[in-house]
Length: 331
Image (cartoon, rainbow, N blue to C red; front, side):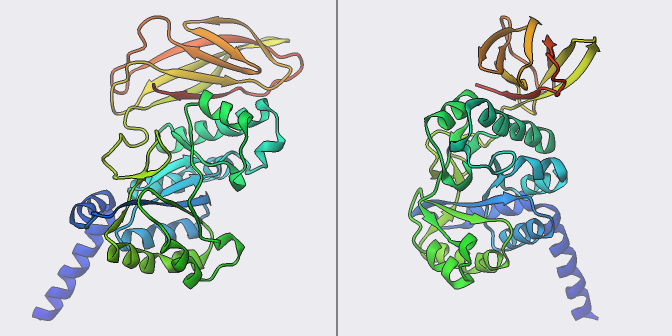
């Protein structure tokens, strides 16, 4: 009977640990020897159903944290999976809406790819991503200009696991062994070999006194989780609704809402679909870059936690009735 009681107690404690992933991660961070520095574990192309859940379970079981660069269309299809990443103590970043070759697109198309994903992640997890990984690692001056406009830091990698290229679990583990302080490894959400590598990656990092950290939105390098504010610590969300409609135009309203922390100002982007154009705005100060309107507050843009404000605009459709994509970021 005594042994049965111990088994039941252990089962209860195990279940409790699964329901408090962030606490467990914090305790693991505190106990780890990170004297050799921090590395960034990153997983692209999710969320992917059962694979994402298995990946999160493996990371939590090994006491690791990682950054998930998500595809916006997949987030929109299953926002709960994106939320589960944050609930597990992970960070999330932008990996474009449809994973195209961005360097083959124009500025307006690139902006749409990034801003739609910003909006999808805001709605799913309540955070404004500050990190962006271009699909295939392809970037140029136009891509970087759009990133800057949306307040995103480009994150590439120092080590490629080659999991996308059929690498075995042992090859993925060997690649991760090349990580050094500040380094970032490219992996993907979608391969069982990648999931299987996690316990060995954790053991190798621990043997070298390295810890899995966050990626700095300032430098794009791995740092200790507490070195810079995590994405979304002072965040805002933007939501859109059409308030009036006529035969050739419609009025849109955007609600800007502060997250769990107060914000001192905000910047919102509204992406139109050509040949739409804005004829009138109110309750904000607009500027333009192609088909993207950047709206800033009139005067003081401070908002208390959870508080909101609105701005509006009239869109001349010119035959195009697509709903504008909106996003919000804090300074």
